[in-house]
Image (cartoon, rainbow, N blue to C red; front, side, top):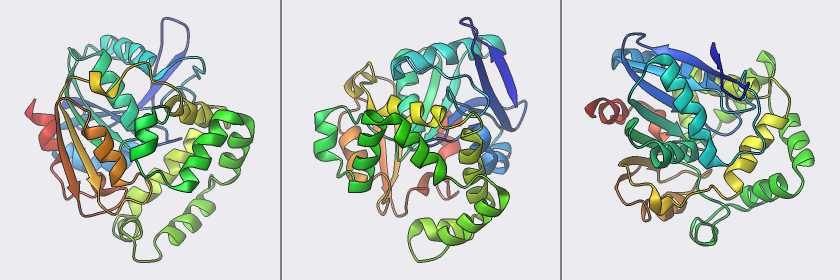
Length: 286
């Protein structure tokens, strides 16, 4: 784990995977997840010659919280990190809730971003068009609504339902791997990667429930920019059988991005990460 002290005194932490001397790429994982989620990409990043900097978003893992900031403010932290590391330009890889941060970087720091690859990214819940078109599952609507209107209750519910011990994580992995859904198949065929993802969520609660709650609220509140104003190129990957972030959500977002290559493929929520798609190629091309 690595960390810097930002100009406002907060700590920003990240984890490094892949090839230490490789082409730099930021990774923003899903909701509540610390940068430990990057461990599941370590081997493939190393083989691709990628230095993967997996970020602890504010309040998650070892990074200090920033509850009053909007999504459009987050790139300021990343600019400081890049400057401190001497990185002029960087690729951006994101999954699920991390996709919103990737879009914010593309919008705010286009001169620093070489490529943006997003898998099943979260959309701007505060926008009427997104709520109308995204086919948001009822459970997700309740999830977002609770985060906005009753954050303390939301945090307590989220923390109580998150496996945080090795035994609980193993039990959850076994439950996920049952069945025939694409995500169950992914868990059976990628048990180490799935365990890494679960451990990253547990690590996201290192400081308690406040960070994961703020992380969810950040996506639910107005982002501070429009999807239509993200002018840099985006490669978007989305599983057609994704029951978490439905393909309709991806289509609603990609239809508004000015410069996007959209890939709607066979698979579930982890289609981007299953090793069958050339995500590193897109990040190395630029």
